[in-house]
Amino acid sequence: MSEASQLNPTNSQPLPLHELLSRLLESEKVSHRHPLPIMGTLQDFNQSLERRPLLDFLNASLRGIGQVAFANNPISGLLIILAVLIQSPWAALMMMVGVVAATVTAYRINIDRPSIRNGIFGFNGTLIGLALGTFGSWGNGSGNLLWALAIAVCAALSTVLMKHLGLWMAVHLKLPSMGVPFILITLLFLTGATYIPQPFFELGTPPPFPNPAESLDGVRILSALVTGVGQVFFSGSMVSAVLIIIALALCSPMGALVAFLGCAIGLLTGILLGVDLNVLYAGLWGYNSTLTAIAIGGIFYTPNLRSLTAGCTGALVAAFLAWLLSLVMTPLGLPIVSIPFQLAVYGCFLVLRRSLSSLVPVAPYSIANPEEHRFRYLTAKEVISAFRSRLRGAMEGEHHKVLFDRAPQELKGDLRYIFNAIDRDQSGSLSLPELRYHFEQAGHPLSEEELNFAFSSMDFDNSGEIDFEEFGELLLRHRRLMSRLDEFSTYFIPIDTDGNGVLEPEEMNVVLTSVNEPPLSDEEVSFLRQRIGGKELTWERFLELLLVI
Image 1 (cartoon, rainbow, N blue to C red):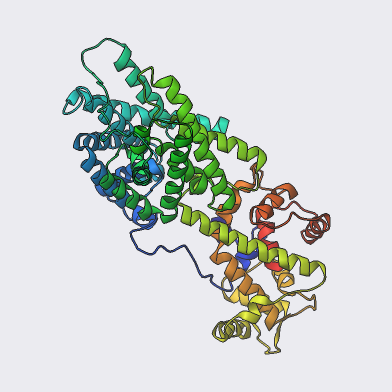
Image 2 (image 1 turned 180 degrees about the vertical axis):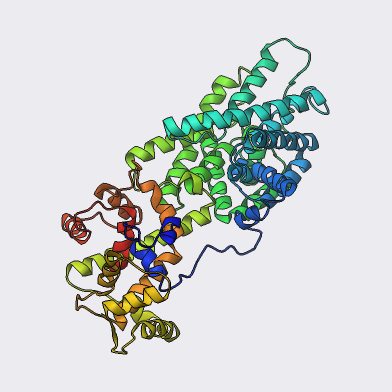
C-alpha cells in the first residue's frame, strides 16, 4: 500500500480495489525457489551486508567477476577465481586487481549502491584484468608491477566510462552498454602497446597450440564444447572450464544449458566456415556465441521458445561476425575479444523490437537470472489466461467462482470467520452499512466513494447484498493476485513502451500475444471500456478488472 494511502485514508482520490481488499485478507507471498540455498542471485544475502562495508565490498567484487557471464552470485565468483588460478595465477591476480579497482572507483564516484552490490560496475574491470593479464603474459607482463598498475588504471577508467556511456546509451539508444568499456579501453591499450614505440609493455606472440590438429576429431570437438564456455574467462584448460560451468550453474542451471547450446552453435558455424581446427579445439570459437545465447535466451528476454530461437540465431550471427572480424583484426595483431557478442546482441535487440514485439524484454532494473525471469513469465501467463477466460464469460453474463469452488475447507472456514464477523445481523449476506462498520472498527474508515466501489465490486449479481460465495471468490482472487503481484507487475512494466501509465489496446495485445493468447477483439475492447466507465485503462484499473471480471 502506498504511504499516502496509509496516512490519509479519506484522501479525495479513492483507493484502488486491491488496496481496499488488502484490509480484509492478508496475501500469501510466493517466489521462485532453487534446489540449494547457495543457488540463484542470493538477493537476501546481498541486503544483509548493507551495514557491513568490508563484506559488502567483497560480495560486490565477487559478483562483478561472475557478471562477466551474467552469473550474479558471489559463490560463482569464488569458483571462477579458482578456475582462472588453475589456468594462470598471474591472470587470476590481474583479474582481481581489475575488479577491485573498478569496484573501488564505483564507490568513490558515488554510483548507486544496488548496482555496485550486484556487480554491474565490476565486470568490465574483471575483463580488462583478464585480457591484459593474459596478453601481457606472452610478453613482459608476468610479475611486472607496471602491468598491474596499468590494469588498475584501465579498470578504474572502465567504471567512469560505463557510468557516462551507459547512461547515454540507455537514454538515447535504449541499449545496455554491457562490455563496451572493456572493448574500447582494451583495444586502445593494445593498439598503443603494439604500434607506439615504448619499452614498458611488450606483448609478444601467443603460445603455440598443443597437439596441432590435422583433421576433425569428435572427442576434441566435445572437449571444445566445454572449453568454449571456459574461454569466456580466458581459460582453455578442461578443469578450469568445468569449474566455470559449475559456477554458471550455481547462479542459473538454465543459463548454463543455454551457454552450452550457444557454444555448440559457434563451433558448428566455425566448422562450416572452415576455421582453423586448432582455434576451434582451443574453444576460441565458442565464447562469443555462448554469451550471445545467454544474453538473448534468458537474461534480457524471458526464456521461452521465441527467445531461445532468437538467442540461437544471435549465437550464429556472433560466430559469423567473429569470422569476419578475425579477417580484419588478426593481420593487425589485435584480438576480436567480445566485439562479435556485442554486435550480435545489439542486432538482436533492434530486430526484435521491430519484428517481434510480443517477445517482452526484461525490465533493466529487474534483471536477475533466467529461472526468475521464467517464473515471472509463467505467473503473467497464468494471470492473463485466467482473466481472458473470465472476460469471455462476463461478456456472456456468466460469473465464475472457480477459486471459491476449488478452495479447501480450511480456507473456506477462514473466509467464513471473516464473513460472519462482518455480518453483524447474521442474515447470511453483507449490507453496505455492515461493510462500513467493519472498516471503521478495523481502523480503516473509507470514503463513501471507496465504500460503494468496494461493495459493488463484491456484489457480482447486482442484488444489493453480498453473499458468502461472492465475498469468498473476490477475496480469493485478491489473495492470489497479491501473492504474485511483484512478479506480474515486473513482467508487465516494459509493455508500457511510452511510459505514460496508460495501457493502450495495442499494448494490451502485446501482453496477450506474449503469453500465447489471441489479441483483444473489438467487442472485448468495448466491453472493457464500458466496465471502467470510458476512462483510460491505467495499471490500477487493470488490476481492478483482474479482480472483478
